[in-house]
Length: 624
Image (tube, rainbow, N blue to C red; front, side):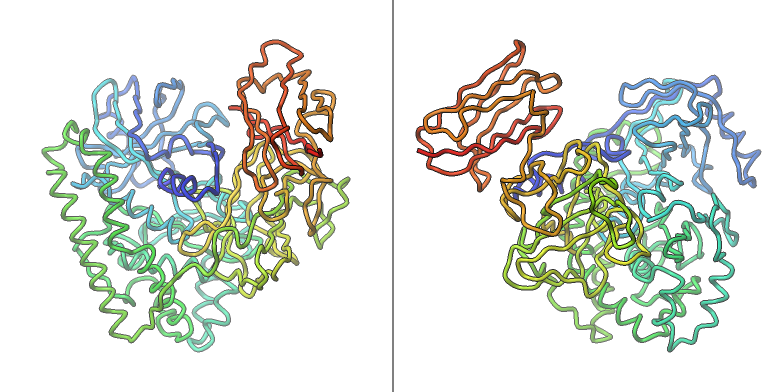
């Protein structure tokens, strides 16, 4: 839940402001019900007939339509009926392809979206809830939101918007998108795209089956991302998925990532989850060959059990899940009664209550399973306080002229962490991410630590196979976000940043605790005011006299693009001691700041505006 998490950030004071910078941020905003209107020359009945004609094909044809999404009109968009058995319901699941007829076109950064009717289930929320639990667990999975759908002005009801698993999805979640993506179709694997397939899935199965049960924990990491696999098994078990990996060994994606040369499973299709059709146990015997082998290795079962204990505390927590259900219920309640298929779907409130019962039953059953094997589920708390480890400096636009190179000699972008305490801190269980929706994008390798008062450099370049710490994501030099979090979702530190300047650091000044400002890089060293530089060109602003005693003048010669902003004077602890809104209609523009009541010391001038957060930094010395 993006907005709930951002509210938390605001509460703890870590993030002061944020914005949509990741593709899909607008469309997957769950705080309101979106609206999608489809206008076509074909009827929905004929669209379904086309689907039936191509039912056994791997490629489906699209009809050209015009689409309006939240008031934005788009023409020449592809639409088709999608799904398996759900396609035969009166309420049809649909797929929209924005670049089917106009090559390269996207909406909100997305090429395709899916409109699911959830198998017409009463609560309308099983898929959204399932995928949310998976994201919180750290799985590489899709985002969701809700929308009203109209087809040729006929209201089709409430749908769940589901993100498409494609090359863009893979690029956002893995170090490389140059591997092979499979989708399970019954007993077969459909190749969605393939560039590097140096280890085919058939070869993976053969290789893993040759590993003895006793050696599996040693050799399996050569072939698969073990952590992700175990997390997916845990979610499949908890969600009681009737039609998934453990029951039919289908309805999921598989991706071969060519840098690590390992396989990962990507969850998909959870409209048949959280029902009473099955009653998965903690170590549910099922259809998936890999889980059958995992169940026979004591080291991996212990790892799985420890992970499950943690998930039960922070993710499969009854109060937490019921709160999420209540939020969805509040969002949907006034609209679901208008769904034209509501008589077939059933009573919404009854469906919500039935879902709550299943959640409680799952927690009870799995708690009993853990107790039956004497699992030592210890209390799971964050080992550090907020900003004990701080994001201290970033460079999101580094080139060869900077003189800063990674261990392989490349001019990679980098992130510097700083330990604000006197004691060494283990980073086991900590994560870095460039997207608040996916806090667990890159886990710190085991045994990573940062000494008291020391720095740690992480290279944001996707080169995860190289020496040093390399993330599986890059920083966006135009603007973005960076988050340091713990396994349970607690955010230790975070940053929303503006457009970055090549070879300049964006750093906390003073070191470890202060506000961010542009400065000459202090790679693996202390940030201080002597390195701070203006976010504007020097000839665009004059500050005088400096040092000062009773007042200081700020003269702006050019504020193009910086209108309607807020000018702040802050002390070295980040406290605002003076501020004023400015109107830059007339240039040059000058402001006089009184300083006679300020204590001697160093202060920072910052300029914030709707288009560019804190675009100006100037050091002011008050000396009387």
